[in-house]
Length: 355
Image (cartoon, rainbow, N blue to C red; front, top):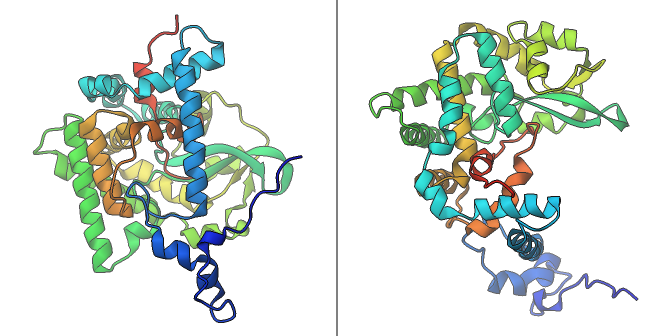
């Protein structure tokens, strides 16, 4: 017989507090008094402890697969080769930004809007969050089937409000964000004299994208993100964007309809595609690529990324690489999620052939 899971932890209880006076303190007081938030997390609780157990199990699976990456079945070889490559911090440090070189060259070679859209589709296939998200989720009006969703995206900070709030703390955070983008562009090889201005251009572009975006609160109302439309109607929202070419680029055929979750956003993108210089778009795409890849690269990129994440979240320590590697594929998919993705394309480029 399967044992009944324990749903109440007696050691959490503060027996000095009456449950009739403060039940939360009674149920959790002892745990609150003795427990601390681990440095690698920004919050902690029972779910966090469950996550620790899950991470330990993932580590055992990944390390076992890595040990059999040349002899196991195809799935074991795939998982094992990925994990062994991701854990090879020595190689990551030696290569620095080299794994991004080919894609950066493609971005630099963009000479037209058509080529810009082609590159965007390629970056989306890598899991890079640039400009917008396009992915499959259950149909909001018929949950028995999946449908395509077109969603706002492309921001380097968590959501719209980080760009629009006007209090001193938000101003300071935005200044630090521009400094972070500047530092990352320098790591990519941009001249030190140019990088600050390029970072400000990226900030200006992302601010305009944010201005067309729904707030987090607005997105919580299903009615605000449910807008079934045909692809012809989507094209009419943003006629400056080549949706036919984009779908071809990601290998997806147009269906009878899709959910354009944030039509206001795509209307707002249209004038940006017409007015923002191509050079600004190219720098923006380089930044989005580097931002996505940074956690799996060498120490310079890794530490700059962590410095910003610590500023943003209050995290005090970088999780060890064995914790980060299993998590990376969850956000590097063949479609872009409506949240900021963290791609592992650089790790894939370093993967050794599976003989």
